[in-house]
Image 1 (spheres, rainbow, N blue to C red):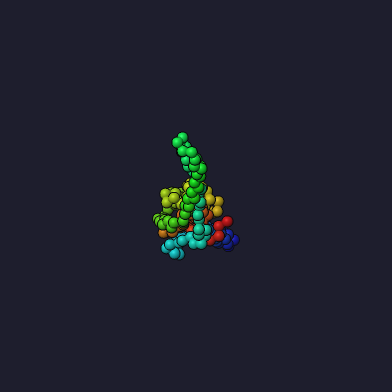
Image 2: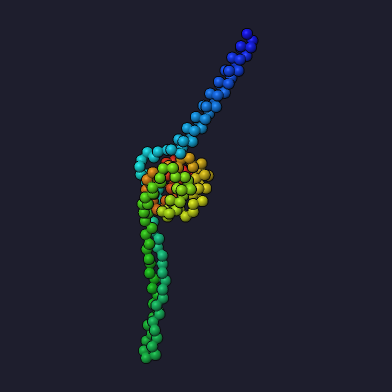
Length: 164
């Protein structure tokens, strides 16, 4: 009788341990896949009103035009100084970015570098890792302003609004 009771508890503990392991495995797999397979709600996400609208840079060119002195003339012309102001508009251009399904963080960084949105792949990857947003990187079509900061780009691609 005591032997049967002992076998029952051993079987029960084995069953409980097996179910616990299966439950932990399902939770971990679901957690990892939900971050990797996140589907963008909108097919196109645009960074709006996050960049100063009128980005204008003024450069001054200083050039001096000196008059030539002729020995035959009695009067001298004054020295002329020309100051030209060249205005360069740094308007934010919309850059369309397509991130294929299954693209890794390194692949996304390469796409952004090729589109001219970032200057350094490792800087992008390090910032994503620093913010713990690697599992939230999404695939899809995105429209990103060319003047967007690194954090704004990460916010658009991950869908996370407040990045500090």
